[in-house]
Length: 205
Image 1 (cartoon, rainbow, N blue to C red):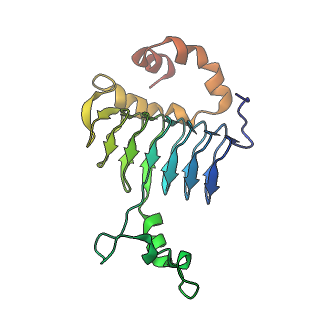
Image 2: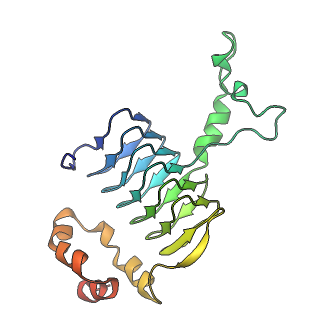
């Protein structure tokens, strides 16, 4: 794997990127499609991810084959088919429906800092996954996920908190994801070796 850079994302082969912005040290896995989205510093997705209309925080860990913000079809119309809004695909004298696409783009997902989205999970539009949360592999997330909560299943439901009482609040207050690159490097050994509470005790959280 090439070394990551603060200047430009590392984008794998055969990706489709449109109307999206990436922070420092971002990696996009091969075959992924990213549209109308942002990924914050240090975030990455593995191969074959489909992310649309999403704001992804820093240090997000997105496994392969995840889908965030899957779009809906118009269930309240006479037909579900995309000839209704991608009309130019079918008729030379018919325009696409810009209002439909604007409504889709407005239904944004929010993925917090230091999150882990497991293999093959789906995050529905307008869902917020809180900071530090974990979404199990194959989960279908239809409701907001509280910070530092582990969810799994279809539909996804809380399994347990990631940490014991009070630790999540301390971690949110510390907000280490806002540290600069040099401070992260200085604390690297503590990130590697200390449990969450010991880390907080040492770093003032």
